[in-house]
Image (cartoon, rainbow, N blue to C red; front, side, top):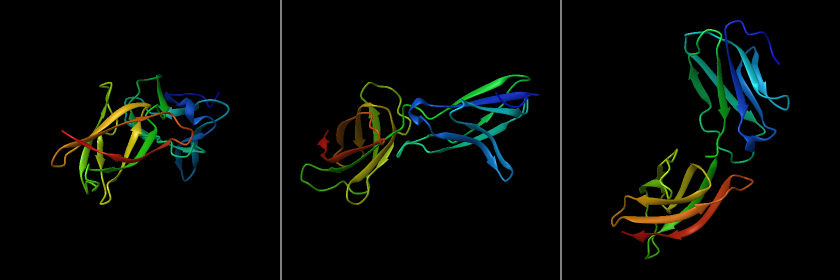
Length: 179
């Protein structure tokens, strides 16, 4: 249910874990174009055909730690056609941990590559440590992962993340193995 569609339109819906969060689409000085809420998906009735339309959204009331991923998308609809967008994804977990070498020292300011154990693509594959070895891995799906650090000697850590209510997974302190 929405305003009449005179050209092209967009439908913006929530990923299931967003639950009762409201998704506000194309907020501006004069209000919000559409809202996905308890009534259902948001209908954006005024997209221009054959032109780039930038659709932006934000979630109000999303679960703590939920990573929305992209918060905008450029779309180019055909005449009298629709574009569907789902806000959020399964890749919404954030893992936090501290890594140390076998001698107990942290790999300070080291880059690493996040790899899924099942070989699937990782949305955000770069990981960095701070001076104390603390790292954050974002946009994870539930599953098993490893981080390959570019330190000398090369080292790796392996871990598993499960779906949690608050979307943050505390991995604690982990000792890296050398390759």
